[in-house]
Length: 199
Image (spheres, rainbow, N blue to C red):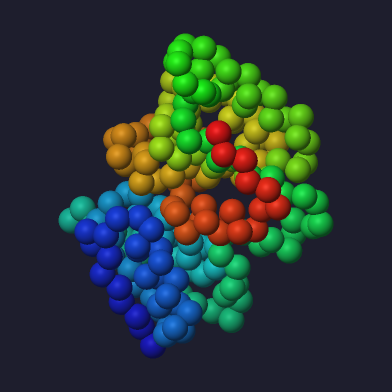
């Protein structure tokens, strides 16, 4: 059975949620999703890949046609294989701004840089770094704190960067670190985390 979903004109996380619902409800052998923006393309493709599906993407006149073949190895997990995480405590840090606190943005950016550097003191309990709203500006080319975030990624910390936020600020093509994500991934990560810290 082939399931086709038209998600053109839909904002995040609707394309991913519709794709997830179709997979779970209809259980198609092949699913085809049409989206009309880069963030949705990345989010839907990554979601399908996380389900261990074979994914192909074709661009047709500014639209993206994402096709996935469902095999016997399709995984029910949403974003990563959590069984491999073991029993360690999982702390998720959500960064909502590019500076810490209110009053003086110059001071706030210094504090944020210091905070990001010091996160390594959490050790292996630091599990996810999620950047939303103005926080996504720290993940782009030219950001003063980009090298710090890249070091966290090299150390094995999973970095999620809100695709809707990047699109809103017209920065999708400037992102240099992490995975472009959607609200489904963020909510799922919150649910799986032992603790969520919001800055």
